[in-house]
Every structure is written in C-alpha cells, then in structure tokens.
Length: 426
Image (cartoon, rainbow, N blue to C red; front, side, top):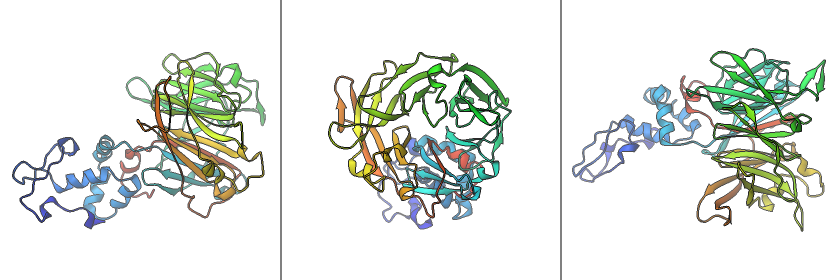
C-alpha cells in the first residue's frame, strides 16, 4: 500500500503547476502558483487521501508503518475525515441461536467498501433478551429491566440504571438534546409479568441520559399500538432529530413523539393502495415507506413511497425489479414466502432482506437520490427522486441457522473506531 502514496516532490516534471483547492487541505495550506511551490507536508496529503477511504481500509493502512498508525489514531483525524467525506450508514445483521449461544453471529456491511465484515458477537456473554442499534450504538436488554449499550464496532458495553418498565424488543433511537448531548429514547417492547407477556400495560416512553445515568419517564404509547408494541410489529424513524415516528407494520397506524415537547401527535393511517405490510424509514428530511403490495396482474411487488410527514400524503418513487425480488427466495411456489421479508434503511439507503435461512439471508439495497433523471417522479408533489437497486454480496461464510435475525442501519462514527487506536480489527 505504501507505494500508492507518493510525495509531490517525486513528480517527473518540476515545471508543472499543480492546484489543489485550499478547503481540501487538512492544514489549510496550498499547492502551486506559477512556480512549483509546495506548502503542504506529505503527511497532510496522505491524511487527505486516508479521509476518503472506507473505515476498514483506514484501519488496515494504520498497520503499515508507525507514521500511518500515528496519523489514523490521532483524535483529530476522525474529526477531520468527517469534514471531508460523509460516510454512508452501515447495514448490520445479527443472528441469534436460542439453543447454542456460541452460534450467534454478527455482520456489518460497509456500503462505501461494498463488503461485509464479520463482527465478534460479544453480546452472547450478556445473555441478551433483545438486540438493536441506532445512532452509532449497539443496544441490548439483558434482564427484565437491564439495558446495555456500546459504541458500534468497538465497545466496551455499559449497563444503565434499571428501566422503569421491563421490556423486550423495544424501539430505540438516538437524538441530540440541548447542548449537543446524546440521549437514548426507548419506546414500546413487550412487558413480562411472571414470565408472561402483559399486553394490557401502557408502556411508557423512557429517555436515558448517559451523562447522569438516569431515565426520564414520558407519556406512553397511544392505545392503538399497545397490542403489538414490540419491534416485531412496529418500525420507527427519527426525523430531523426532533420527531420519533412509530408505525404499525401491519396496522399502518402512525404517530410521532415530539422529543422537545415530550408529547405524542394524533394517530393517523398511512396505507398506500394494495399494501400488505410496510416499514417506515428516514431519508434525510423525508419519510420513506417501503413495503409489499398487491398488483392488478401477477405476484406482489416491493415498492417505495415518499411521505410528507406533515400531511401524510405519499407518492410512489420506485419498485424493486422482479428479478431482484425473486433472488431473495428459493422457490416461487409458496404464497407465504413474502412474510419473511424485512426492511431497514437510513439516509437514502434501503435494505430489503430475507430473515429466513434460505440462501444464507440474502439482501438487496436501493439507493435513493435526488436528480433530474429520476426513474419515477410525481409532478404534483414536486418529487424528483431516483432509485438504483442492486444485490448485496453474500454474507461471509460459514453462516449458521438462526432462530431470530435482527437488522438495522446506523452511521459508524470514525472516532468510535479510530479514536483509541487501531489495535482492534473491524
């Protein structure tokens, strides 16, 4: 790798003029006027190049030599890299085996590198009841009221003070409160009393402050969500860091929790024609609905809709190609096969995957982007969005058979991986 990065002084033409925008240079220097004058250190140029690499490549580069190791492990590098390039959120898949904990497996897909990374399933030692992720953190409940969290890809795990309500499979989000401090919001999740699920209890929203290790009790879920109150039946989307939307996958009921006012909006219905089940996602300042729907002729299709979060008006923006949808299954005979389809996404990336073991949990991804060459646009709503679908590479084998598969999308902050050095492999 060392031979790929060369000093500007090694150029074969000493009279040539090289111009690099000042904003691209980490130290605020510049290269070139009429004479070949280099005001930038070679390490600044290497730092700039490293800032555009996928995280895994940066970690590998840090093992090449002491100089590169010192560069990528410097606390300032992660902050600088974030300013040059906005990395896309990762897709995480965690498989649980209810009988043999050692067969639990965790994987992370880096869309910038286009590859999966096998992760250590360290949570097996925590006797995890449920597992989730959001906002750069893993989350797990390890007993009736115990809640744990850890920075993505790095750890260590921290256990919080007890929740007000015992719960399993809640919705979890991360938002910034006043002053830029992180807070965790926990919504729903089945409550257990004497080993049995209590479907009558109005589970409250709880907000955790990591700085004080304290929970704040907030108004409960609206009654429309209480029967199916776990993430198995609900999906969520955090929009603008202010509204935490909760959506019924099958009921199509939707409501938003205002994180600043600590209050719920009214419950509405969001159901495009023909929808069988769907999932709610956040894409920048938009809500995206992704779901399976019936078609007038032929088998069901998987479609995407852009949703106005104020009016709840929606417009279709894309449909998954049938060949990609069929590649997620082993057979075309079973009408119930689509029940194993799940969907997660964030910031313009929508992942659709099969949570059954068929073909080792295959997945497809759609990239949503703005542009004049949109494949599907709605002139009345002003949408100008394009959808680009592709198949996700297979999971790195061997892949065990799981009793449960949990998946989520989350950004991976560079400082959580590089801030303390590069000893830990991704």
